[in-house]
Picture 1 (cartoon, rainbow, N blue to C red):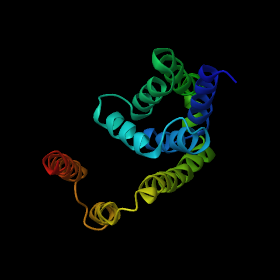
Picture 2: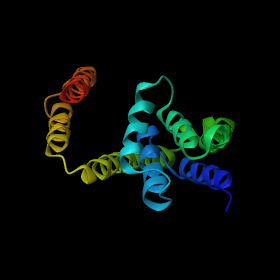
Picture 3: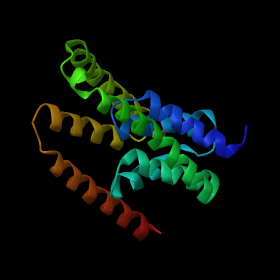
Picture 4: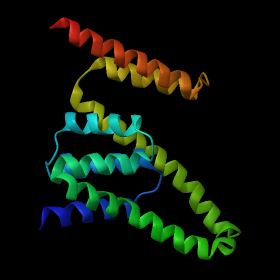
Length: 179
């Protein structure tokens, strides 16, 4: 199969079949491009997701841009983005056409509520899949601290983001000065 078509089709099917936003899609991209296709290694995927998070815009689209560029250059970037944005555009087009009927439907509301629980599980699975190969106990401790801070202590997510920035900068500074 042509690499560009496979890149498009993989992103299209991931985007079509996932709910929950960029973190869920990034996890499925990792599964496809790292574990199945072996086009990117795990460390590169972690870097791609970190860059996608820090850039303005949707994480799923940013990740698609970087994965496409890494695997097939400019053309790969274009087909990867197209494959990622087409399904939501099509789904939202259909939903907007029947919005009144959809929003007032009790079963649709229950379905969406159930999907929220599933999305949470997928995000946790994606995060642990990315941390597990690192065999770094500090990452596991940070993950536990963030989870406790968010769920038990009600820490504002902005403080967690700022803390992650400080820790990332400190780690980068330590690596540079350790050489």
